[in-house]
Amino acid sequence: MQHGGLVPILVLTVALGGPLLLGLAGLLRGRSADGAAAAPVRWDWRLSAQSAILYALTFNLVFFIQELFLVLPKALTPGLHPILYHNNHSWTGDNPLAALFQGTGALAIFLTGLACALLLSRVMTRSTALRLFLIWMVYQGLFQSLPQVVVGAFSPANDVGMAMDYLALSTAAKAIAALAALVGIVASGLWLTRPLLALAAAPSEIADPGNRSLFILRVATLPAWAAIPLIIAFRVPRELAEVIAPPIVVTVLGLAWIQANAWRVTDARPGGFSAARPVFPLLGALLILLLAFQLVLRPGIPFY
Image (cartoon, rainbow, N blue to C red; front, side, top):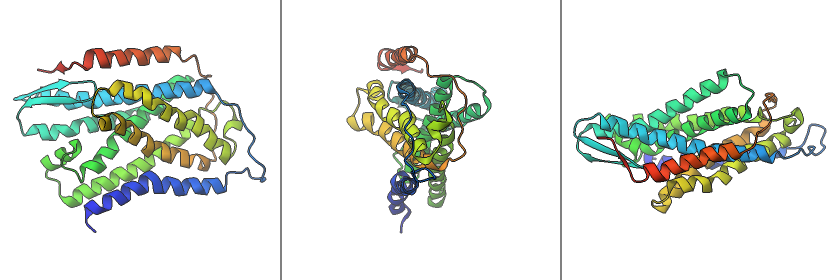
């Protein structure tokens, strides 16, 4: 089988097959150890709303970082004249390095995700909002960058694919990069499950497989899907596929593994973080960012 024919199989396995099998295993063990149904817990709607807003905020912050670091290297390159927009960038002029610099955006947000993961592990704070912000920054940095490596390994038209071709990577090297990225996608989803479960206010919320899965559904999966219309508001106007597909792909790839893995994390403990605060300040921050995207970035900012 050619490498190109292997890609859809690997992607479907990572995005759907693996989480489905893991989730089914959890479903079979979704009752508490004594066979009784898991005791229901109260839904913290404020925490869910906070998570949705921060998911939308971090998606767009990370996307901006990506586009900014696609533009900056070109701005410093003789012969290239880039323009930064709210949902893309463009350039005029010609320089062979332009192809290489199509990979700098994905690299920048991948490093952003790793840096935020380090902060999440090291920073001691009781603020639920700050913890959620760091969690979603890790998520967006990794799940917006790693899939680009998979696609770029087999699509020369992809940004990362252009950089790979500039570096003259062999077919085998590209396939190895794609496989490493797929492993990274799985590992990232599994790793992020624990800090999300630690947001629980009481041990009873995550005491058994059923409640752990329900907690992740309420604090991560449903908020992420609820955030997609908010994200779309940042991305219009553009081709419909470019507006809708990226947030959906990013959400499916990561949340599928996090949701499916929740039941397995038997040693998860509440982190003792503060209760979720009013969401209006976060809504205000999201609105300010939206205005910056639509009023400042949308007309285009030339970097020359």
